[in-house]
Amino acid sequence: MKFLKRIKFVLKFWKFLPFLKDYFLSPEVTAGKKLFPVAAGLLYILLPLDLVPDFLSIFGFTDDIVITSFVLQQMVKMAPESLKRKYKVLEE
Image (cartoon, helix red, strand yellow):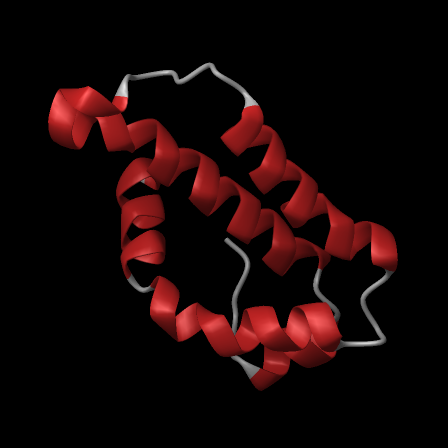
């Protein structure tokens, strides 16, 4: 069930873009909290390891969806309450 919620979260990613912009531009968010998603993304891109190879069609992108949704959910958890209220982002 949690996996399906993550897929839904990633598929609606475009709605998340204004939150991301404000997250990175907000003075309420510390530099360390801004660095986490950038570092996690770079680390995932640079690591040659892939849990499921991408050439396996839909199954190959499963790990990408899981990692992306995990990073985005962590950003929501780290976001100040004002941003969560502004974008009606709920932690689960």
